[in-house]
Length: 170
Image (cartoon, one colour):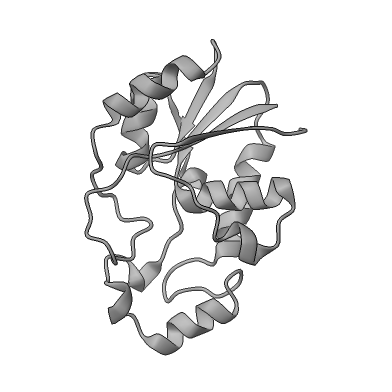
């Protein structure tokens, strides 16, 4: 199955702020859509996170975009909207020591994020598909499909407004 992984445009948020599920505005999706749409094969089914920074780009690519919560970014719980340097150092150290399984207070673990992203894609049929989503989701899927160690896939560089193509067996 041909899958296009698309990251949303740059959000309007100061650097150094923890955000995942915050539903924040982003740069204009139209220029990104104009650049990416010609690269998608005819008949590509577009799926999106419900968060506006992804959804608005997806809808610019295809007005019949299908929305799914499982494509949302990681839920950082009580850390959402906080400057990283204001988050308890011990909590951040605990997360760094167990990136996959540590759960921020009131949030979800990276393992849970990966599980729901894989669960979503496993249920898909047909090709090609485009997933307009977030860095965490894209990393989690690439880590799974490429069988990368967690410390490698959690640090993959995924640019805003970028698109990666991957072929997977379903």
